[in-house]
Image (cartoon, rainbow, N blue to C red; front, side, top):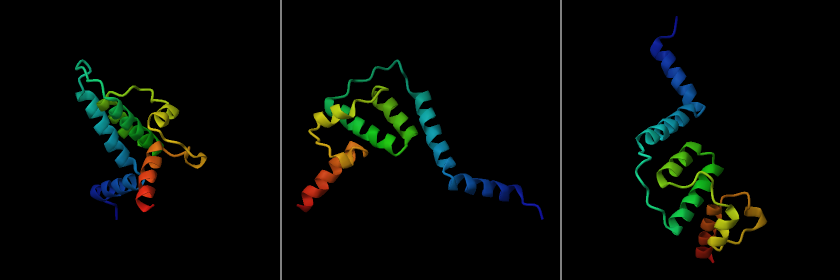
Length: 121
């Protein structure tokens, strides 16, 4: 017996969901809709130093986890520069002393780890 169109659609949807393709497509569509609605002629206020650093910490985290579409929305919405700030500069501004074992992780992990360990000390 041949599978119905409904069965084929269901199987295709399950396969695409299992591979993570649907999630990526939904994220990409959201990012593109935002870009289409964003008015580039509308001036954005300059972010404060704190906001700039927070956005860069989040950006590094998103990039590390390969959340590229989310990162692109963050950059567009926040008005961050396309080129990220240098990691060493961010660490210096936040008085973060990096250990060799944590240099491969986003700085945000070190910040969170510091506060978690501080509570347990």
